[in-house]
Image (cartoon, rainbow, N blue to C red; front, top):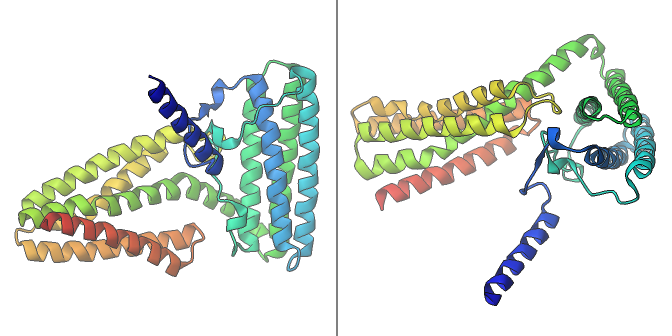
Length: 346
């Protein structure tokens, strides 16, 4: 028993260490609607601190080329610091000195953002869009939080901060429009485009990538193991439909869209599930051709087209350089394809 307890203690210590090293990779999360008033305030304090640091990172990246924009981000960071001080003061008056560490990755529904310091080649427009998305998400959080608290002082502060975050979002938009000729006339179009990317493109792309890549191994393993087109078609269809159902539920359950603006979970889940199935069915349909060699040749051509389409979508909507996207997608797809062929011939 002592040895087992020691082993479990060692395992727990390693898990805690891993959580400290990779805070957004895994671990339990709590639903927003289950947060107490104390936890809501603690999360708000953490959000303001994180956003202030991100804005200062933006300012540091822009200060040489776009000093005016950098100054605006510095001022926005200073305002976030003031928000945090007000939240801390109210928290201590209401709940005492200890403030639990609750971050956005601990609460289900927040967008997992890529660290700013890893975005070495982000341009000014990308940074402005990120700032707009940050302010919009934080504003949604404050409005939803204000609906859930009963303390009048806390509610008033949250509503006031939501108004300020809306002003920040407007400032970020005006800043972008000031340096991009003709951008003001297309503000609504840009907002619609962002919603389209969040609600349709992102879940659709995730599904297409999973369906196109993950089904390669079972399909081609069955094809080369049996040498029979119909058997390969059945396996590919089963893998595609199963992956579509799995990915659809995973996307729908991952985020209710209330804080992130990503839209209704059922719509995102449906889009993700359909695109996952489409990604797998595309290179499965050629195996309806009885001739195994012809079917396999066409299937490989379809796979190449699918991988090119994924790379193009990533470059078009996700701000990924096209050649980098091609390399990432093709490399991953080739490895999965090779695994399927080797397993099928074993």
